[in-house]
Amino acid sequence: MTDRQHSYNNVDVLISTEDICKKVLEVGAQISTDYAGKNVLIIAVLNGSFIFCADLVRILNLKCKVDFISVSSYIDTQTQGRVKVVSGIKEDIIGKDVIIVEDIVDRGFTLDFLIKEISLKKPKSIKTCVFLDKKCAREMEVAVDYNCFKIGNDFVVGYGLDCSGFFRHLPYVGKIKESV
Ligand code: IMP
Ligand code: MG
Image (tube, rainbow, N blue to C red):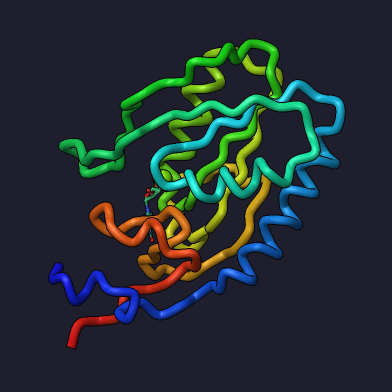
């Protein structure tokens, strides 16, 4: 990718900052209602969910802790998506009401892996809160309990989501324009 392709000018806005703010507020309020009085542990999936999670937790009217997990995907010989933990959760999970906060669910492998991995540590409950849902790309059925936006099968960037590590800082969700 050239430097020119990394410029703001090369990204079409799909979801505006204003729409993101409104929706995150709505989802945060819903979680606050659903989890009132519970022992909540938010687990943010790095790197992509860092902005979404930061905005979401500041809305929550709950007693909660926040921890992080870093995972990476790789392709194995059967070309199925595989996921491994790069950096794990430090907080105790036993008996906690866990909410996994993820940037996007695409084929579903990452979230499926995370739910299974975290379930092994005996939480009281697990739910998922996903900023973007690319439902049409799903290969693995996975439960999305809270979701801000459903999108089509476009590759998107911004609000934490990257392309080769770039564009995470954009305050909106966009699509990189086709190069001319
Ligand atoms: P899945 O395992 O196929 O559901 O992939 C989920 C992961 O792929 C996400 O956590 C993202 O890191 C990455 N990903 C999927 N689609 C996009 C996209 O459109 N933009 C940026 N990252 C994406
Ligand atoms: Mg991710």
